[in-house]
Image (cartoon, rainbow, N blue to C red; front, side):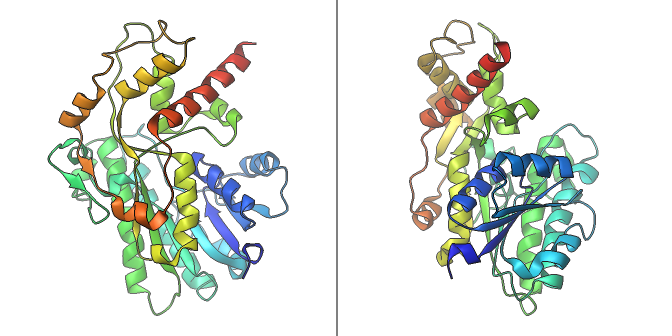
Length: 350
């Protein structure tokens, strides 16, 4: 079967990672059905992809409501061979963690799998769920320098303990949504035929698929770089740290997860290396003469010693072997991210 005969459903197709995935799928010759929250958003995406005949969009207003995906799969499930479930809530402006983070993430995952079971049990062969490093370790363990995280690791928070604050709740939402997917497959093996893989990226940096997306707000990881680009000389900044990956590699991994049969049943831990904000600042000051002297410098060169004390280690050699391609390094990733931001900023000023 050629890629032209395979239709891939992408939930949350209007998001940062998903736009890259849609681009890569179309480039590879797949037919793509994406979901977005509104007709306006969907029309915007179709326009961005020049009304590509291989791309169509469907409205899924709210992934958190029961049976959110039933309508789409009832009408179009027979066309779909691969499902990439990328939609999930990512925001920290809430105090009702169950209502705004935990329940939507879990329900969204369950409802897409239920829709497959009801309407596309014989046609959907592969499902890939976009999870996170947050499903592997909570926000305290990720800073523990005695800990090594692998593809087998799980965030040890409970439903109750992850409600300590918004960041812990976000991490918990990724864990419980991913567990819901694995449990669903275990319980429904006789009534569905799909294999499951998950993608577990660290902080995702890299350029937006379309530069004008930066005008509509920004994903939380890229927001870290935006804050540094906008910082002032001598200003304070929060030194974020953890594993990072370029969005272009996350996208490639989504395709590999269903194209390579060895990825079936696997959790793919996406991390090129550890990073901290100080290292990103060093790169910005070295690579962009227009920023040097205008943005904060922090303590140049102190990144590696900070990471040694403040970050756990990651061993994703299994994932790297399965995927078989080289990830973007941190410098290239930050330069490409910041170049695009500065370009859009300059356009806004002119």
